Length: 117
Image 1 (cartoon, rainbow, N blue to C red):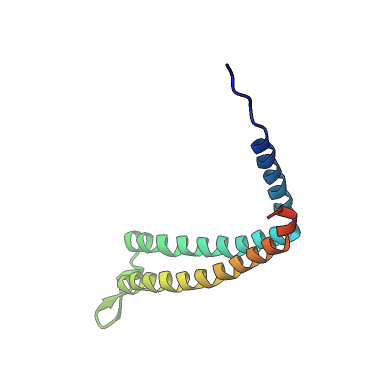
Image 2: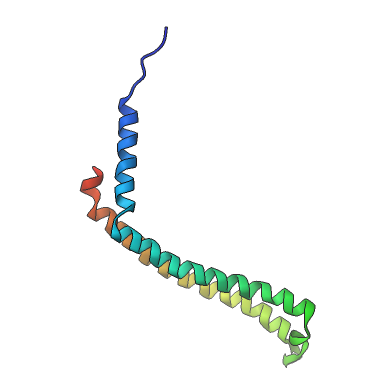
């Protein structure tokens, strides 16, 4: 004997998908994604470049072998700068992500009635 298929959860699930698609097609949501992408892509490219330049310069050039100050080579200065860049980048990202979270919350608040929540 087969059990009857319940379709009410399928309808609700499908309805949620339709509501979600409506939400992601709004100009506010598209603007949020564009702003996030405009921040994340250049910062990611900077970080990747900044970190992969050290081994390349250290292995294939003599640029970092010179003395910077107090018997410390430029390789050590560059390597220590990477720590500073991580901390600064982390702080900037936290501040920016809070701004994006606030924008997302405003979008959800605005469309909450249409989402049926």
